[in-house]
Amino acid sequence: MQDEITNDLIDYKFYCFDGEPKFLIAQSDTLGKYFYSLNWEEMPFGWKKKDPNKINKPTNFNELIDLSKKLSEWISFCKS
Image (cartoon, rainbow, N blue to C red; front, side, top):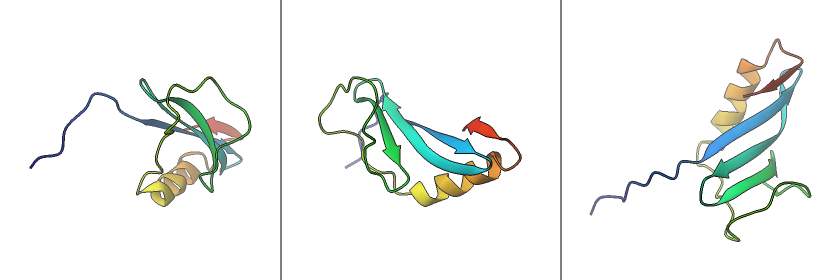
C-alpha cells in the first residue's frame, strides 16, 4: 500500500542569531503555526493554533539544525 500524498506541507523556519539557531516556527495550512525550542518543546508564545495535535518533530531535525547553522554562519540575524 502506498503512502497517501497530501498538499499540506510543513514549513520549518529557524531563527538564528550569529550563526546559532535559537528557536523555530513549524507551520502548515491545516495545523497552524507553532513556535518550538530546539528541544522540540512548544514555546509559551505564538499564534492561534488550528489543531490540538500540533506538529510532529521531523526525523531529520538534527540535520535541519546543522543546515541552519551553516546558512546563517556569517549573518547576525537570519530566518532560514
